[in-house]
Image (cartoon, rainbow, N blue to C red; front, side, top):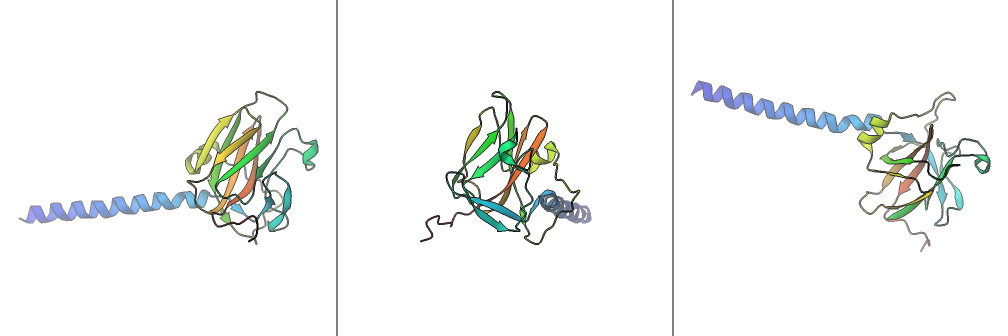
Length: 179
């Protein structure tokens, strides 16, 4: 009888330990999530509608500060998105493979990255925390976002030796007409 009680106690403590390990593993990716401080609002045609949050959003849209002159750049639109969106990716090569990840993000408009801070995520981390990922050689990709919750995200595009990224918002309650 005593052995049975000890066995039951061991099994129960094992279950609590397993739950704790699972919960801690679920919390670990939050530490890996990018912090965004603002985003560029864009309409369905990709035209800029202003900046929301910090006036210098922490994004890397292109390989040159003047995006028109960049060999590589990206733009996500509309932003905020409701259920569907596109990303346009400029690159000089027609057949260049572009890897795309959308990952959850934390919004903090007060966040100021240091001048030497660059967020170059490791690919295995992106694979781990991505809620959507794909590969393409096309310059424009259409996304069905109906399965994603409202919130802040970051889209990463790896092309050639560059990783470009944009801060994005999915807002299921957003009304683009303002009515």
